[in-house]
Amino acid sequence: MTPTKTTGLPFILILSALMAFTSLSTDIFLPAMPRMSADLQGNAELTITGFLIGFAIAQLIWGPISDHLGRRIPLFIGMALFVIGSAGCAMADTITDIVFWRVFQALGACTGPMLARAMIRDLFSRTRAAQMLSTLVIIMAIAPIAGPLIGGQLIKFAPWHAIFWLLVAAGVLMFASLWWLPETLKEEKRVKASVKGAFKNYVSLLRNPKFMQYTLSLTSYYVAAYAFVTGSPFVYISYYGVAPAHYGLLFALNVLGVMGMSVVNRRLVSRYPLEQLLKYATALAAAAAVAMAACVWLRAGGLALMVGLIFLFFAMNGIIAATSTAAALDAVPGSAGSASALIGSLQYGSGIVSSLLLATLSDGTPWTMAWIIALFAVIAMLLAQKR
Image 1 (spheres, rainbow, N blue to C red):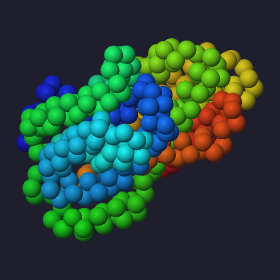
Image 2: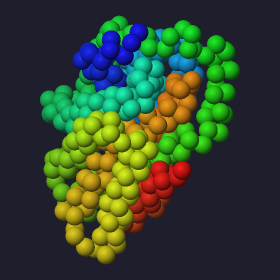
Image 3: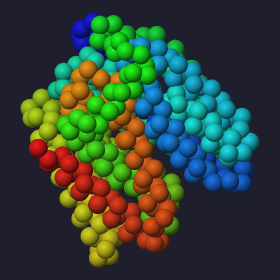
Image 4: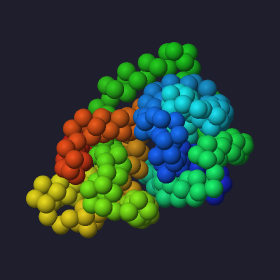
């Protein structure tokens, strides 16, 4: 199979949908969380924590399996698990039950973005892979915009359970679409050792300095990004008095920045080395984050300046995610599945770090969110600058 056979619109749309499964699975029911908490007398935020934990851990299992069996079989199994988990959430009557089924749902959902990245690496060189990943980011960015809007409209005339039934339908549709995807990992390139032996790849990956440099730079950036995702509802709505409906628009503004920069990045990666782009993007993100933290500390600029600086910080994700992932996978071409799994596990597991820091250190002001974003943005920059 040649790359020219896998650059058509159906292929790109299916991979983009797989990449968007994380955002879709979480963002679509965010508007229903207060109602869920009230109906079930529990902490609905735990449903997000449970999903991220399951998502992070499961990728480490699926990665070696996909290197051994190929990409399509794990994808089919993953989508089936996602459908079952979504149905379990829809029929649950306690927060504990939903958390359990959310973990189960994550076991399947994680195969989407992880194997989409691996399939890109199977087929394309590092520069072309970065271009393809930027394309996927542009399309998948629709999910965090559309998800809350769809969920918010749905609960106007239906109980919150309907959101999970909608995810069941999305999972079934995704399962059916997988028949159009080719197997991208050729038989001769698969790991011949047992699946148990394939897990040893993680040891070599952790010892690979180049791979870990780019992976940890991306992870640090996402710790900062998740600090905003987790902390911004309180900062925008409770502290600055933004209406909940307007909060969604401010959040969507950041996603539009990511989409725009991803379009730009498609051209940049063909002109400049990935490492150079990553250095500049992380430096800009760190500058915006540090400036935002300084303004919060000095109580200068208010909400408007924070929104502008956060927009710049988030826009850099359109470059950072694609270039760091492509460069990391290029460093370990023989273990794309395991490498993609480890990248994804650390990337999405970073949200756990952010939420724990905010939960334990929050002082009732934007300062905690601000310094966490600034600190980890600077760490991401320093890792990217390392030679």
